[in-house]
Amino acid sequence: KAGVTQTPRYLIKTRGQQVTLSCSPISGHRSVSWYQQTPGQGLQFLFEYFSETQRNKGNFPGRFSGRQFSNSRSEMNVSTLELGDSALYLCASSLYKREVHEQFFGPGTRLTVL
Amino acid sequence: ELKVEQNPLFLSMQEGKNYTIYCNYSTTSDRLYWYRQDPGKSLESLFVLLSNGAVKQEGRLMASLDTKARLSTLHITAAVHDLSATYFCAVEREDFGNEKLTFGTGTRLTIIP
Image 1 (cartoon, rainbow over the protein chains, first blue to last red):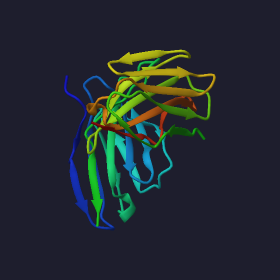
Image 2: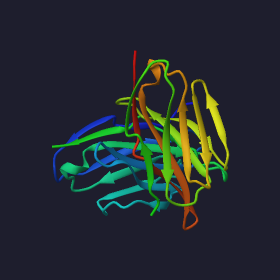
Image 3: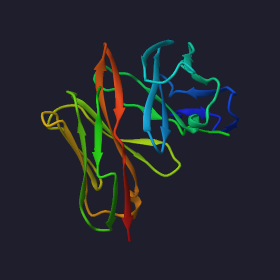
Image 4: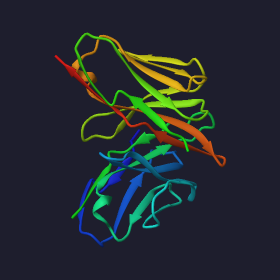
């Protein structure tokens, strides 16, 4: 079974630009979550989508947005990039059984903002 | 707001020794997860702990959960170099009907030959 895939793997942008990251979940998984990982702040939750609806949202500014498509693939967008947005962005998918919300992570997209 | 704290943050230990990583959290939760992350890589799921008193073991790693103490431990037995990685615990809680994972700070484990 194929794992979670994320594209692109590496990205370099300049301040003020916008970026779109893509995530394809494990087949059959309908929940997709996004996390930002930085050395200073650790792993921080961005948002979660389930059946094309945002179910949860972390404490990030409105510049961070996402969406999910009918095939469960998800994208996240960051507009007006700032230097502090440089991070590893991880996507995780979950089968979302009632008792277990185990998440399986993709390889991540490393975003560098210059 | 749920807070998840791990200690130690950094751990350097010799091969063959035993040690424990602690994960404390601030609000009631019955579900806790442990993940491993190798440098430059993504997170790999290690254990899912679903109830008070749950204990899971895989190789030299054993995880346990005490929901009353709001504490989970990851015990390493007779450490080997391959276990060098960063270990995260993550606590799940229900937030307005939706489950949400909050990750700990991570423990960077280095096994010295």
